[in-house]
Amino acid sequence: MLPYAGSTQACTIRNTADLQGSNRMMFKKILVANRGEIAMRIIRACRELNIATAAIYSEADSTGIYVKKADEAYLVGPGPVRGFLDMQQIVDIALRIGADAIHPGYGFLSENAQFAQLCQVSGITFIGPSPQVINLMGSKVKARELAKKVGVPIVPGTDEAVMRIEDALAFARSAGYPVMIKASAGGGGRGLRVVRTDQELRSNMETSAREALAAFGDGSIFIEKYVERPHHIEFQILGDRHGNVIHLGERDCSVQRRHQKLIEIAPSLILTPQLRREMGEAAATIARAVDYDNAGTVEFLLDQEGRYYFIEMNPRIQVEHTVTEQITAVDIVRSQISIAAGLPLEFKQEDVTLQGHAIQCRINAEDPRSNFRPSTGTITAYLSPGGIGVRIDGAVYKDYAVPPYYDALLAKLTVRGRTWDETVSRMHRSLEEYVLRGVKTTIPFLKKIMEEPDFRAGRFDTSYLETHPNLFAYDDNYEPEDLVVAISAAIASYEGL
Image (cartoon, rainbow, N blue to C red; front, side):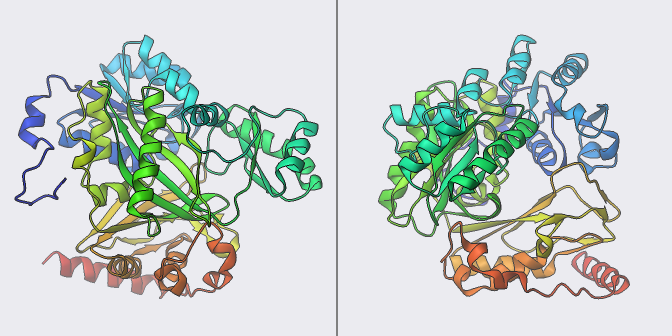
């Protein structure tokens, strides 16, 4: 068992003094090659390990909290995005300032094997799996081949990237519509299209390839049978350089829009203990097959009949890692750092227990009722929720200017409870408390989901938003801004007593 802070039970995770004693094996300084909330998350983990941090930022991000919280910060450019993708510039900064490791977070260069290789040859530790593993698992086609080889079920699909429309049509007619066009590299729903006819397949193949090329620098695509109304289940993996691989249970990421996750829960409400063991072992088997080290996520689809299929592996930290941390008490980012430093995992599979339930809601600067159109502007009032079991991972504040150049994620609100009902109620209460004014956000939409009977009963799959259009009929008539600010100040003052 992995007890929570304050437990009197014996704990296999070493305490802070033990970790400080082993810091001779740890890093002295880590450059965080990312921005926003994930940069803050990494900086916090480093602070607890007494490791110095260096941030990088663009001019558009010069006022970011993570820039101020890091021990050092360095401007990269040109432009708001290019600097975060400039591998040589980032490595050169790390060498110049004496950073002995780089944490890429998620997105940007986190799944770039060339960047991991550049770090390696430059004498800098890349906090993630090896370049060889990233190259293999970063390709959905290669990952499918591996899963098939080790006996893990996969969704029927093309064995290699598809270049010709004739080959795509031949597979679709053989497997039967609907099918999915998927980018071989990357994720986040980019390059992904569900098609139900020959005509739709013809018109979407080129579009998907262009989108994949723009997002990932790789325009290769493949075709896969589309599983109707599945659950999207993913298992969190940790592997070290001593041959140890474990999983930390699963997350259900089925509440999505355009194949991008909005809400994540842990553990799944529909997995039996036997199916959890089977799927967890399948995830670990795939990781062992490639000598996986560091954190990763193995993703599955679970159909209406309870059959599961491997779809991909993400060789990086995930946005939704917080729900796993809440039900296991394992600090995944801290584990990433210690694994990269060459330390063995501090616990075994039998030590991992799932305690209670957790939900993560992504607080995005988007307008759900306008097809989730991104919203930019200045945050005029901000007060995050609190109380027992409530966690905020964010990097925004009053007067923060939401830039138009990056992902719309502002913060992640994660709550934990003993039961599912308690957890949903706690999330609803937390969303009611959340004050974020100046831009449109997903907060009122997420609050509506917490009130919806099917969600509260655990009846949801990847078609949930499509089959519940009433969710978009929510009330977002906020009180006048000056009153909201006054209420926020009063609450903050009261809680500070």
